[in-house]
Amino acid sequence: MKTAVFGTGPVGQTIADKLNSLGHEVMLGTRDVKASLQRADKDSFGRPPLKDWHKEHPTVKIGTFAEAALHGEFLVNATNGTGTLPALAAAGAANLAGKILLDIANPLDFSKGFPPALTVCNTDSLGEQVQRAYPDVKVVKSLNTMNTYLMVAPRSLPSTHTVFLSGNDTGAKDRVRELLRSFGWENNEVIDLGDITTARGTEQLLPIWVRLYGTLGHGMFNFNIVKGEVPK
Ligand SMILES: NC(=O)c1ccc[n+]([C@@H]2O[C@H](COP(=O)([O-])OP(=O)(O)OC[C@H]3O[C@@H](n4cnc5c(N)ncnc54)[C@H](OP(=O)(O)O)[C@@H]3O)[C@@H](O)[C@H]2O)c1
Image (cartoon, rainbow, N blue to C red; front, top):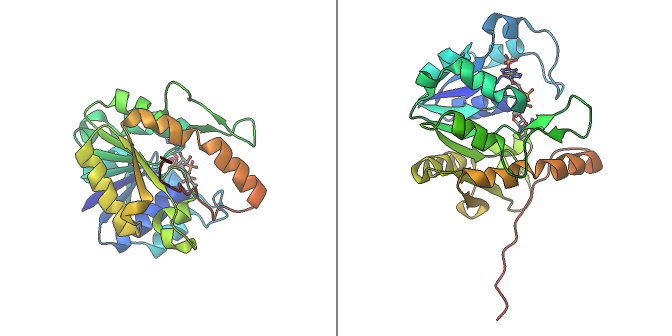
């Protein structure tokens, strides 16, 4: 399937790589293709610059956010939380209309250092802001509560663990569930929390996630919801 991945950071690259290996025709979206391919610095994970990654993944196209949105029948948002609405505005409402958008972004503000603050919480979420801005886009929030490596390699942990779904459109959530299955997730690991307002809960897991990251010293962990019987 023709898929657009908005975002050239670690998440965008990881998801694009996986989708590409599964046979999707992927285009990464960025603000300025030339500038992004000219970067020489390693990313925040110490990974090589985009141009080196692209040499190893020549079948993944790179375009502007608008070109990627036009290309994609299925869309993935892997942009910085503070850049998500500007990135989608650049993608263009007409290019997004009617499509499914898997939203992995978190509304984190690192401007005052670690730990980051949430830019929206309690009574609203980034997922809802996106859904309100683009009512005819089928927004499904998922995969935002774990390290990017685990998103596409869930079997790297020694036990089952949990991925959440939030979104208003049941058909869109079914499509994302299929995608998760293709990434290696088991059905019983997927918890559908309900409509897009439930993204408040998963985005608000990030303050504890970043503290766990600080305490454990790495990101190879995830939340696991253990279900039991209600006592009679
Ligand atoms: N890293 C993880 O393991 C992880 C795990 C779960 C969720 N997430 C979430 O996934 C998203 C991506 O994370 P990441 O670590 O891959 O990279 P990131 O550094 O958070 O985001 C990089 C992308 O955001 C775009 N961007 C930044 N500011 C922008 C602005 N003002 N307008 C438009 N676009 C802008 C950049 O565009 P250019 O390409 O033009 O530079 C780039 O493509 C984030 O929301 C993050 O919270 C990350």
